[in-house]
Image 1 (cartoon, rainbow, N blue to C red):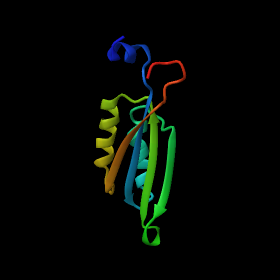
Image 2 (image 1 turned 60 degrees about the horizontal axis):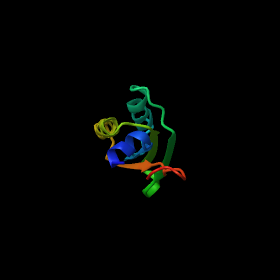
Image 3 (image 1 turned 45 degrees about the vertical axis):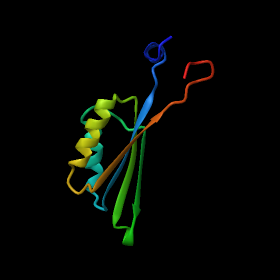
Image 4 (image 1 turned 135 degrees about the vertical axis):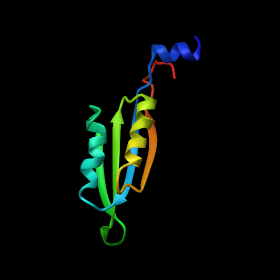
Length: 103
């Protein structure tokens, strides 16, 4: 069976991961969340941390399950355009194949 046929038979689930960095400002968090909610997505994970000198920086780690790659990239672009956001890092987690499934 070809790789393309296998991928259709066993669709891989992936999770889009974002790490948003910005100055510590209370207005950043609702603006970041709005990028997802306007499109009907609810993050599976949302974790924020203050760091740096005097806790002057904010890092928000977000995970959204089952996004198409094009939509995941579009969301990253929208996050990068937000006021005060200094950096957006992205990655993708893929669910491991269960025993007995083709990898």
